[in-house]
Length: 199
Length: 431
Picture (cartoon, rainbow over the protein chains, first blue to last red):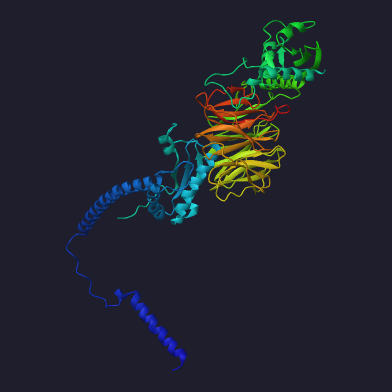
């Protein structure tokens, strides 16, 4: 037996196997036509329809339940992103007591890779107006660096500073100053289809 | 004896008699009280503007007299009301009122202002001048021209040109406004959005400022004549505190996404920014050129708190200027280099509150100019003697003008809470 014949035989065998695998249902010999069932065809359709309707109802109820759970989770996710963090006077370092607030943003940002955010740095009004714009920029940048160090892509985070120009609380007292030394967070893309972590 | 020498002798005599009231270390206004025409004459020769002849005579006379008063180099003497004198002036009578010089003015039918300056002691006219008054009468350009006449009178009397033919550009409600330095002619700069940090081009024709929007801050240059604006290309982040070089060709501003550093760009062409400072993540802002254009004073936080530094304009040789403690807080900012090059004004915190100070560049001696309320953002007048700044002394943030030689202070009325004032160059060629 030469090589060509061997190859040809192998190919034939392979083709037969492939044919068998493709259409196993037509391999058996033709069976006699099944005896017609006594039930009218319309009955089967209505049962099927009823089953489908029931399925749809169950699915809708489940979806609604899911949506209810999701709506809460989405609101919680948005709130986690929007949560403000606060700074000490003339400082841009992240305070230890603010780290949990920043950490709560990480799972939402990690799961929603299309989400882009803007960090808005703000200051109290005790420093110079203009130098405060620079301080606000550093506060926004510090938070951006932190998020990037936790695995969030740099391109997803914009930073901007408003200095002391947009106070959260007007006033010349420690309470107002403390509330105004802050970074705010805005979702600028991906807010319409937020995924939430499954429990 | 020349007229000016006479003035100097008179001045010296007065100085001896009233020396104790001169040279107080700080302004001494009581809260809410505005020093007016009752201010002690000090060394200043008396100048009286006699009733003016011609159309709008009373307005011209009021502007001239007020300008001479606000200039702080002469004592404006109230000459009472009456008709414009005709014939020879009664010098003896004016001498009794304390006048060393008389300003006699008339508005001609062709709309020009004719002025004669009389030396009372010598009993004769020393200087005459004619000043074109652009129409409409009492309009902004007309007023600026009358201010120009005041400034020339001041030069005739003292040898130093006055600073009334200037304007102050400032921020009110995050909009830009200008006002004549006598408080008249308040005017919003049209077509400017949420704006801060305005500054003048040395020609007086252009301004630069920072606009604040949700996607960041940007620098724009505006032509006050044509009304057109151009945004300076930037790389996002913060772009703040513009300043023109003294030759007007270069714009320097602070830019960055983390810290900000000073960059220079051509003021009227698009070209890549050239880095000046290298603050390694710190904030470096508020540039102010020396009058020769070779150095820049700026605020830097490179040591962990804001201080004033000076660098060569190309960024070499940065040097801490405010080396010694001037207060109990480590916060000094907003330098403005004086037009004579000798001093830098800045703000420093004392007991947590900003005050205006100057530092002498020769011996680095420091002088506090204010003590009442919160005082910040100093900007020098072209005479290197007056400063406009923001003060809270009246309750709200308002603009105040201080004479750094006599410490006389007055409020510049701007009709609302105002800040970030920039004193223009002389506007004798601009409109």
